[in-house]
Length: 221
Image 1 (cartoon, rainbow, N blue to C red):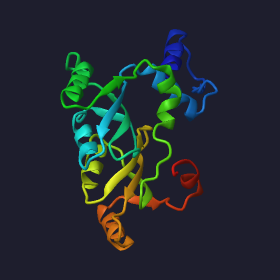
Image 2 (spheres, rainbow, N blue to C red):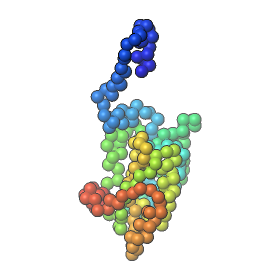
Image 3 (cartoon, helix red, strand yellow):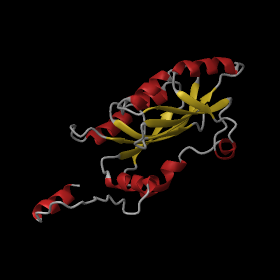
Image 4 (tube, helix red, strand yellow):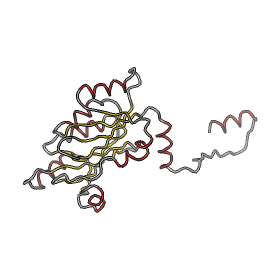
């Protein structure tokens, strides 16, 4: 529109009708997402090893907050430790912020590896991280929540519960709503009713996917 107005002014044109056409360069939104990801050099990625103990996942995330997390993938593997893939944007007003985050993790016995320039990790591993698991009494849920600054932090705080999280995947797609996949281990010998009541009280829209064939084929041993 600005270019059209400039053209009209420079050529002193009047009493004619013009139409400004916006071209998407034959790109759909999926391709634009890839372009924006590669153009944005502020995103950094880490592989973090955490102990498989209650509260470790939250403790890990607290070291990244309040930085903007763009992706977070975790899958239960063994009773001892788990590997987490996380991408986030370091604070621009803090010098060497990304380096400081890594040092904080390592000082608290959270081994981590910088994957920011790892092409294999950025193109493929980020989508495959986790894999199959034999986590017992696991139920799978998809959640939607309004996407806004701090939305993921509030969602994790709401999940502060007595059940163990065995799977977690979040990716910021720039939509109005955040989409999260969560695996929750229901305590042995307990009924589904208690967990169902808890999920209703969360107040987030959710869909249970425990019986989805894709879940049994690709995420379960």
